[in-house]
Image (cartoon, rainbow, N blue to C red; front, top):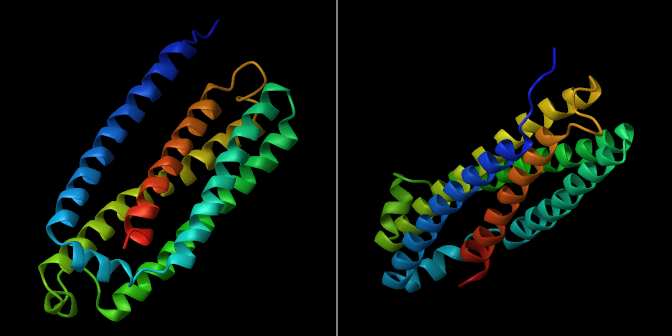
Amino acid sequence: MTIHRDDLADKFGMWLFIFTELLLFGMLFVVYAVYRSMHPEAFRIAGEELDVALGTINTVILLISSATVAMSITAIQKGDKKRCLQLLSITLLIAVIFMVNKYFEWGAKFEYGFYPGSDALAELGHGTILFFGLYFFMTGIHALHILIGIGLFIYVMLQVKKNKIHQTDYIWLENTGLYWHLVDLIWIFLFPLFYLIH
């Protein structure tokens, strides 16, 4: 029995999903820009509370992970299963490191009382509340995307090991790579907005 495959439809579906995600984050970026224009000083002061070094590290490692996932697709196209799995393992490790960094970063904010609904944040004024509300919401959605990416990489690696993803059928890996590039692209916008523009 021949299994019907429609790689074009699968790719189109992924691009449609990416488009909806870009719309979602695009709207959030607009909301951020509006509130920042209304409370420039509060946003500047609040932004200085973020750890630029940690944000920079996360940016660099995510850029590296975009390269490793792209190379894993090239490896499977060449029939190099071992290299593909090695590169996916590196990508998965980077995703986990990103989440560990984010855990410590968020943990430090909670320790200082800088979280939505806290008394410490309420004392700093409406602009600061808006900044940290957007910070936790937008980086939280991004972190959720990272967790989904981790699940996808685990699934794809298992499929490569079972030879269900191989040289002539790698659409799952390709779509996972597209998804991961989206996650990286979103962070490229989040990083300067929250960490650099003061």
